[in-house]
Image (cartoon, rainbow, N blue to C red; front, side):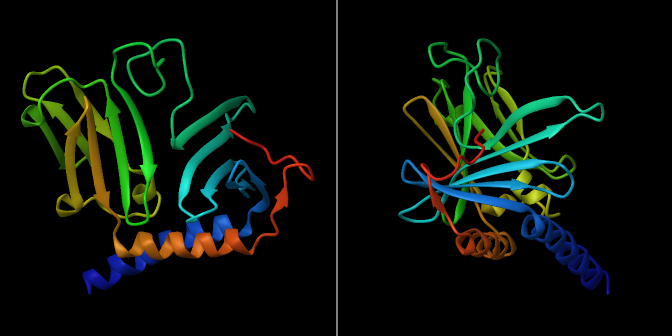
Amino acid sequence: MVSMVINKQLVDKMSEYFDLIKSAKKTSIIQDGKRKVHFLLSDGRELVEEYNLNDNILSRRAWRQKTKLGRDQGWEVEVGDPEPKSSGIDIGIRENVTNPIISRKISKLSLEWRIRNLPYPKEVFSVLINAAKDKIIVKTSNKKFYKEITVPDLERNNLKLDQDRLSFDHKFNSLIITYKKPPALLELEKKILNEVLRLKAVKESDVQCPTS
């Protein structure tokens, strides 16, 4: 009985997000080899997604929302390279510094994070799921790096992280973290992609789609 209740809550949460996407006002444009879609959600948020035309894999996702006082908070990049900034120690620092830089990518079957500028051997890294926080915890035994990673794709759909789906590798001073998508997320992404492909996409010269 408990399992049935949990499964119903999961279905309801995922259906809620899909309905939000389906009911959004949408504009689609073909530009630079990508299908760029702008969503204006009923809750006032804006979402921009970019899909590669050759394989329909999402290459960029960014959100924009306003504060309660109506102030624009700017675009927050969820998937793709972060917006460059002049300083910081986290997402979005300049390429010419040696601080760690994290970016997110999505493949057909996996979610992926790349953390550059980590010149340590693979053996010093620990990449584990903290069930209480529902986050991926990345740290080194030499205490040089620590990072908590949230997974909004799962979080907004009430999907819990599973250690068995998590793996990592280290190449060329970059830590590559891979999380195998659960079936429920794959099905949701398929439904959203179907909605995107149903849109009449226009060429760049015909209309300007808002970008992040």
